[in-house]
Image (cartoon, rainbow, N blue to C red):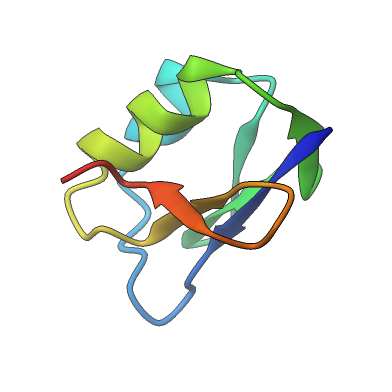
Length: 73
């Protein structure tokens, strides 16, 4: 099973916090962050941590069924 990562470029301000938290999951690409790859192994808490600390709530983590699991409320 895998999780899917996405970054909304309309929301991302390019702070780089996600890339600093999980550099193998997120990179800065110009003025915005993006996932290194869209699918990651299920259970990688660093993805949820990055979604939680994103100041613009631009990161979404979805489970294998497509349910949004991050950011956590």
